[in-house]
Image 1 (cartoon, rainbow, N blue to C red):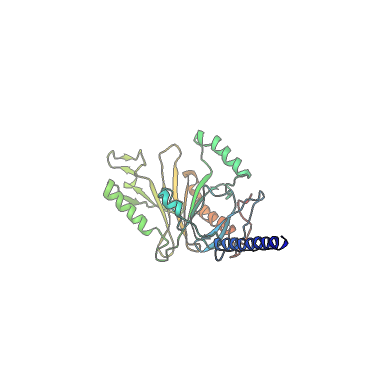
Image 2: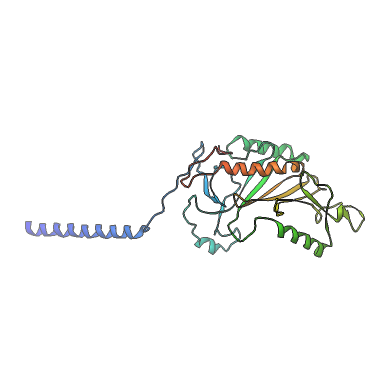
Length: 293
């Protein structure tokens, strides 16, 4: 009996060892061959992790709560992409080298600050929405979208864009944009048919197809800033775009025309904000982050 019992025990032990080895092999086979190292994340006072990546030529760490929506990385499916494509897509692991295609945020024109959730600017933004916009008063916030530019062959200017806009306006709507004699806030101004509606012979009463257009060239003659502004609506608005060569980015802002005189200050402050988010390749901040909660 003892001999038979020992044999049973031995068989059980051997089976247990085989099962243990098999489970180990299965576990190892399910693991990736080489896991990417987890990056270091800067965090805010609430423990929220920053959004990280490479914007144009610079690695950045965007404070949590700043981005309006989410950051889109190069290769991410579009908002209206086929759901099947979205389901299959696997973004590369996050890193400070993962190229960012675009992201947006709210910039306060009056002091160069940015909107951040769970920060005083959140209350300020809500207050301005409730007390200024309903009464037709200028809204001191600009919606900002930043686009990374990664095509080395694409020029960082609006030369073709402006030329094509003027061509389409002339060919499609028979509206010719004419340069004005006097610059405005350092910008070269173009007005549709010199500001006169050809059908009435009077100043435009609608700016749907006849917004004022303004440009600024660099020393080489390339258009680096392109601004289009309404002039007849209850709250006149401007669509403002500019390129930055050092960052290799294109920036789009939308704001009340009241703040057009500050267009250069806005461009400088946007770059100052981005500079405050720069990090080393390991994620170490190179300055004090604007907008950090």
